[in-house]
Every structure is written in structure tokens, then in C-alpha cells.
Image (cartoon, rainbow, N blue to C red; front, side):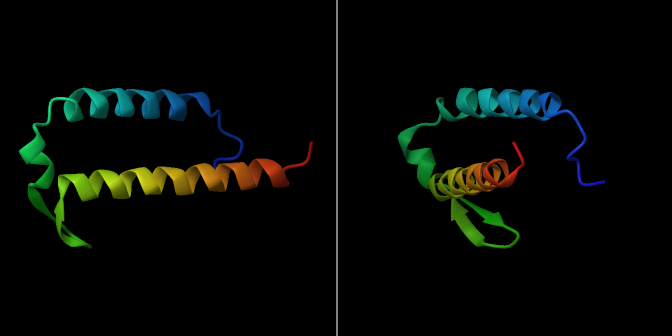
Length: 75
């Protein structure tokens, strides 16, 4: 199954909760902490700042995919 027959609302609720949690955590980050480095299994050493940038770009890519799918869907 590709998920096209499943309701969208549970996924949207999960995303909303995840984003609310991320906002709460990230608003508490101090300026110096943005440059702290962690090791990503695929990207190697990555700062918090860069990780958030990648996360944002990933979300934008998915929004573009959704827009393309909606544009191609029969009316």
C-alpha cells in the first residue's frame, strides 16, 4: 500500500506536535550552542545550525512534492 487511501489527518497531527516541540526546544538554545557539533551518521560532523537548515530544506522539498502531486491529481 502506498498510503494514498489512508487519512491524512493523523500525519498532520504528528507533524504539528513535532514542530511545536522543536520550536519549544530551539527557542531555548543559547547563541553559542548553535555552533555545537554532533556527528551525523551520513554527513559526519554537523552543527546544530546546519542541521536545522538541512531539516528546513528537507521540509521544503516535501512541500514541493505535495504541490506537484496535487497539481497532477485528477479534479
